[in-house]
Image 1: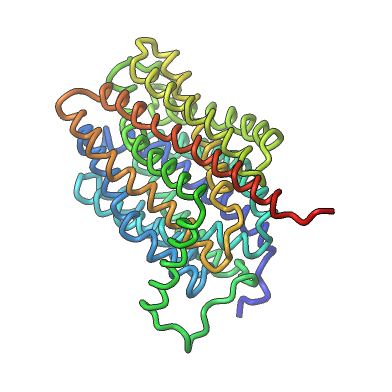
Image 2: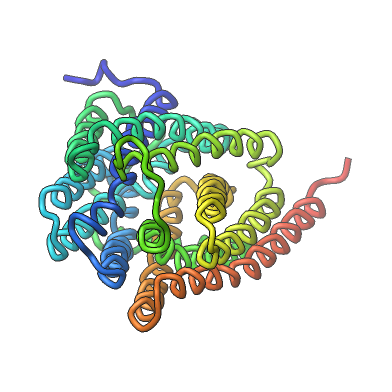
Length: 420
């Protein structure tokens, strides 16, 4: 009935990035504040909430990625957005530790339906080269949209910190409903129904994904990078807001509206990130893994140093500046990593490989979460944040290894090329 309403894949991908960024930014502005103030969670509980989310991602990431490869990436993405919206609604309506844990399971499951499937879907629709360029363009679109979402959060959450979570949750569900009407799927050919020996085929697809990663030394090193990005991130994601609230007397703006303060901070970060992404788009060749690797080396080192400085800074302005640095660099790292992984992947296992990298990140956060939780319990949030910065440093070794493997691959291709 809706077949004639399907729109251009590039437009739909940008719609997903725009609309999701609006609603997610609206919710993320208040999530940590809501959990720390309205729900009254302790530092240990805040980290356990994040660890629960990542365990869910770890458990569901590869199975849902395989579903996207075997059945339908479009269907997987639609299901994912509906589930994520439901998860945020649960958190927004029930400000207590156990319901918030349940919400993480629901939205973590939903996220895994979109992780990997979204990148694989758009790559099959427009081709690998165009998709790699589109990743950075979509990040820019998403950043502009995030400004809109943060503005909404300031208005909606002025008198009720939970309201942006509720409105955002409904909005994310609406994305799934709209995609069911407008989203095409022409470049993907699912496994014929008669060939679907469900779990056996899923295991075969997963094994193919593992074999692809193991056969490429560069990807094996990128796995190491992703692991330590996951390990370090949990402490920062869950504690940065509480660290600022506990360490400094925040300036009073907009009548003491705390949502407005954090929204303004994120808006500044987003504007600066838009400029930074444009710079990276012009300077980094996303079709060249060596160029991506060099950029990742610089970004990784700067994130680690900035995070340690953020934790130890005695000055509010310096801490805010370092927070902005971390936020900008992380937004740059995301699309670079997607393009890094996406180089020369077989379409049949593309979603599975991307999902496996999502799972590696989840494993890292599951490992890192308890480490910083123990440090927060026996020490302080400051000690946990310093530890998080140090936990990222091993990623530098793996970035260097990936760059060496990329150089070897390039040399091998030159030697294999026929003479003129």
